[in-house]
Amino acid sequence: MRFSLRSRMSRPFSIVALASVVFGLMLTGAMSGTPAHAATTSALNAHMTINCGNPVHTGLCTEVQDAQQVFGNDIYIGHDEPQTLFYSNVPGAGNRMLWQLQLPRDPAPTNPANKSFNFQLHPAFWFGMAMCDTQSFPEQVSTCAPDSDTNIVDPAVSSQHPGVAFMEMQFYPPGWVAWPAGTSCDARQWCAALNIDSLSENPVTGQLNNAACLNVAGVEPVNFAFITHNGVSQAPANPVDSTLATFTPDRNQDLFMNSGDHLIVVMHDTPHGLRIDIVDRDTGQHGFMTASASNGFGQVKFDPNGTTCQNIPSDFHPMYSTSSEQTRVTWAAHSQNIAFSDETGHFDFCNGANTITPGGNCPVGNTEGLANSPRPSDGDDNGCFPASSSTRVQVAGCQGTNAGFDGSAYQRVWPDGNTRLHPTPIRFTSPLTGFAFNVNYNRVGFEADLPRIENTCNRTTGAGCTLIPITEAGTPAPFYPYFSIMRDDGSCTWQLGAQIPGSATDFGKNNQYGPLLSLAYTGLGGTVIHRFNDFRNVMSSNPCRSSLFGFGDD
Image (tube, rainbow, N blue to C red; front, side, top):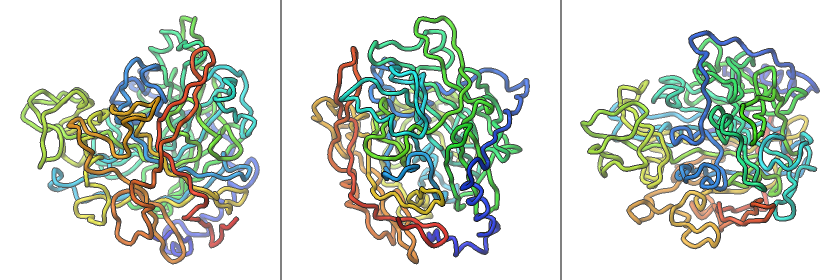
């Protein structure tokens, strides 16, 4: 796929129009105003939030480093996120960037049992960024300076780290169960939402937020807003005030995109919080969202001894100026800041004659797994829906966590050039930063949080941690996806999947994720604990440099 802007002049969104949008984003204060959020209708006023303690919702949540401590169980098993990380010491690299992206396509929906689809491989994929949140972990410092590397504090040195949240700019595939029960906005089109995940835990004291607030917003509160055409959130984004309308797609307001469309995704800070713009170069449509108080975004007040749950209206700003191994989210399993991540490990089939209750477990007597290798349904088959619940692809399945590593994502059904049976890959460029979005990130890393989610792994010693996860049958999973790059007419794009024809290099396939990574975290009493939560490999350069308008070198 070619991302050269000069090759897209025949598309409805012309290079002239694109230039005007990018130039507008370069101007100080441009596009920084955010109107008040739209009023919800009475039918959609019931409170609703993303409950990260519910296995059905974990595919939308940032992976915590210790689910047992936070949630009292390991519900996040299977919450799998292979990532590319981008590093640069250029000021602004941690809060201002432009990505180019092509949405993947699916095969035809006929005979779906013998094919794979995007919703089976990933309920979402996303671009990430660390954010200031003074009410979020580790609750030790009451201020956070936006866009500043003064926030870099190594937990191995001090527990006095400013509160931090994590932003995920998520994209949701079409064709299966509709939002908010599922994660498809439409039978054929994609949608996107700005998510900000926080953690209501004090690691030094071990306290969580008060019971009333945990009941309303959960221990990992999520601010959520679909990308809309006018930048107005369709309902309050914060988890205290959010309603069913917050999570119900609205075709009259939200940006919908076609499979195969080429997108420009711009992220930058404004006086009223992080703003994200998405330009669809194939249809000419444009949507955006600002993480502002006027759009209903807010911090959940950390009040462990209280009896109520309070939203603090807030403009969420990026946390760091640059991006490096030190610009971490200090409660997350990953070492992430500026990253692309695929959210995988959240689909398994549920086949059989027994009736499936929408949203329930796969009934005893039904089978999971692919049609040619069925197995009895088991305890990780939850968040299940019958084929009749699907908007287009008529398959019955479960979207909860996949503790057995035996669902679709761990089979040889990833993009491999066979578009009759498998999807095309997600394709994206390395981000560009700088005032004119013409500066490349100079280093790239690969990371997979498999140690965090494997039952076989001792995260204290590293024993039993494997690069290919071990299934519940005790054997390595048949497949684990990896990144490769495609070069075309001087341009370079990243892609995720299997062996894709035309790839320039695959960086050693699964070996690209590198050795075990030990990360320091703050423990009880301010102690330091070390955990092996990831495999990580940081390269000394960026092998897939990007450009805008034909330039982009440092």
